[in-house]
Each structure stands twice: as structure tokens, then as C-alpha cells.
Length: 338
Image (cartoon, rainbow, N blue to C red):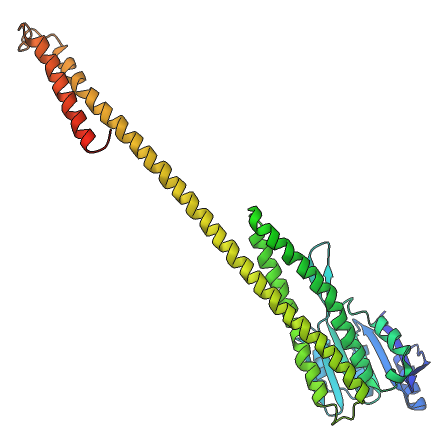
């Protein structure tokens, strides 16, 4: 149902619950009251009906139809167009879900167009209806209530993100390879949250600057200042979150680099040890090769082989073996291969 709630207020009290937009417009004129129309993902025809009745600016209507707008506050004569990005934390997926809320304010009307489940505007309406003196201050009071609700709903998001960051800081030193992906994912969530929440500070400050010009009640100005303080604190904490995550990424990168260096050192050490073993094996192989060569030559027993029948041939061959092997041993020893 596109029309979530639809009421006409006179002096801060609900006096009518019209069943259609046409009846709402008629009640407003008859009772000289203020209309608050809450729409949830409305059809184009419904947006156009509201726009035609209240004379909404063409550019603002186009933004409301297109959606996917950045948070902003724009003034068209005596009308305000506000875009907010409410958020809520999903525990199951450890993700922040962002919504979009468009608000049109005029002298005697407020139109809210919600494109997601948050914020819970029913709470805002109920709270303001319990304070007729506040609601009687006009559309600005409704805008204050919505801003306050959006900022309040940011608090659970902050707590969820803080929990995730604490877990990452503990996870950094466990050697879990998935921590880098989690840091990147959370940093993206924090950046998106920053784009949603940070513009609120400038928007509320802009409302405060125009309070005197548009004769906003003093008490309402104080309420807006309180919301501004909360928005500033949230913005500061988001910056702290970003800094913590960037530090965590730096620490993780350093630890990965240290681990890789350690692995390279280990591989180098193993390679050196293997080279030493190869040197020893090659040295002993060369030492043993010399007597083996002499023995092989003189072991062929050909009749015309020199010194074959010489009585000193055998001891001379042994001496040659010893001399060659000793010489090779000395050479390899000096080269520190043995």
C-alpha cells in the first residue's frame, strides 16, 4: 500500500484520517490544517498528484521519482526538499543496509516518500502526536522529528560496526587469511555510512542558519541543536572507525610482509644447506672418481697394455690413486666444500 499514513492536523492534533489524497487536500482547505502524507514506494501517478496539489518544484519531483539521490537539502522558495539516507545494521550478514527518504515541506504540508524499511516514521508520528505543542509548531517540527529518528537509528549501526572492528583487531594476530577481505569489506561499509551520515551535519547547520529568517520557534531550534550534536559525534566516530580500519590494514600488510620475508629466509637457508650437501657429495664423488678411473683403466687386462706385467705396476697404481684422491681432498678442503 503506497499510502502508509495520511492525516490532517489542526493545532498539533490529528483531526482527520482521509482515505485518499483527494480527501486529504479537501480537508486541508476546509479546516486550514497541516497535512502529513506518508508514502512508501509510491506510483508515479501518486507522486504527480501530490506534486500538482502542492506545487512541488519540478526538479525536486524528478529526484523523488528517480531516487538513488545523495543526502541533501534544497530550498525552492518557501518549500524544502530533503533527501536522507537512513541505515540499519543487519546482524546476520554483518552488513549495513541503507535506505532513502525524500521529504517535501511546505507552509502547511509534509510529504514523506520512503524507499526502504527504515526509518520507522511511525515512531516519529506517534511521538509527535503525543506532544501537540511541538507538532503544532508546523512542518519544521516534523522535519526535526524525522532527523532525530534517522540519527537515533544510526546508533545501533555504530555499535554493530564497533563490534566488527573489535573482532578484526583480535583476528589480526590469529593468522586468519580471511581477515584482509573482512577489513576491505568493513572499510567499504564505513565509507558508505560516512557518505550517508556526514552530510547531515551541514544540512542541520543550514537549517539553523535559516531559523531566524523563516521564524522557526526557539525551542525547535534547541531541539535541532541537540540533533546536530549527535550527528557531529557520529561523524567523528565514523572517522575514528576509518582510521582504525586503515591502521588494521597497515598492520595486516606488515605482518604478511614479515611472514613472507620469514618464509623467504627459510627457503634461502634450506637452499644454502642443500648447496652445501651438493658440494660435499660432488667433492667425495670426484675424490672417489680418480682411483676408480685408474682401476678401470688397468683392469681392462689387454696384452699390449704398458706396465701390465711390470712388478711395480700394482703399487704404482695404488700410489697414484692415493695421490690423486689426496690432492682433490686438499683442493676441496681449501674451497670449503668439505
